[in-house]
Length: 272
Image (cartoon, rainbow, N blue to C red; front, side, top):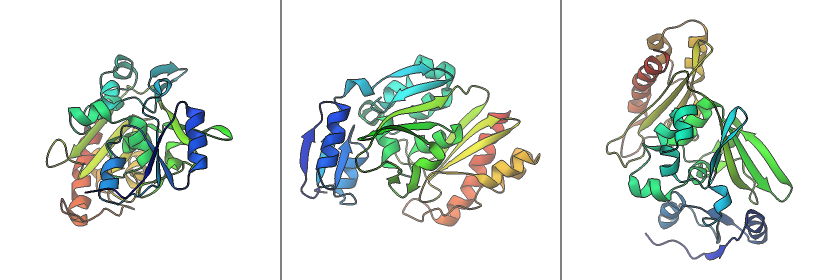
């Protein structure tokens, strides 16, 4: 439980952080630390340098941005969960943040850190996929916007370049119908399986947690709904195209059956 040796530098601004990332070999951004540090202790992650951006106050905000809500990458889960603006404009995001970890994790962990870590078992990425959110990244060549569907590349791998920082997450106003359900053994545990459902055009968009190397959309479910299927019939296709892990918490077969139950329940809640 001891991390490999690493250097530590503190960034004074976003541009300073980008410069430090570019100057160091095998550097990682440190925000709240509740995703990266446990991985370092297990030596799953071995960055040579940590660039601490945790004190960059301008990356911690929740504001209206046209028809979207912009959430700064360093906004703590607790602040996301208690935001009146998100409660009114995009309640699935605040409700999901309220289910993350325990109070200590929610008061220290950040939404951007969780998303950039790209853990397929994390709660928020599947929700952002279902919402078709946008990620704003900044690097030495300026800003770019990445669709949530293009952001999660592989296990613990995002579309961010090594010298880019996730600065903002933009979610649409979405209050029509939604649900986020997850199954875990204890409240503080990662989800064995999680499902986000957002009603859309008579059907729904469905995001899955811990059903593959990345968070993913339930394409078979969405196709069935678009064809007029009821939630129960559509949910039978929830495991299509997935590759869930087998671990100490559940086998892949158990997850394939569990996801069908959770998708049905989430669809009934979101579309009912």
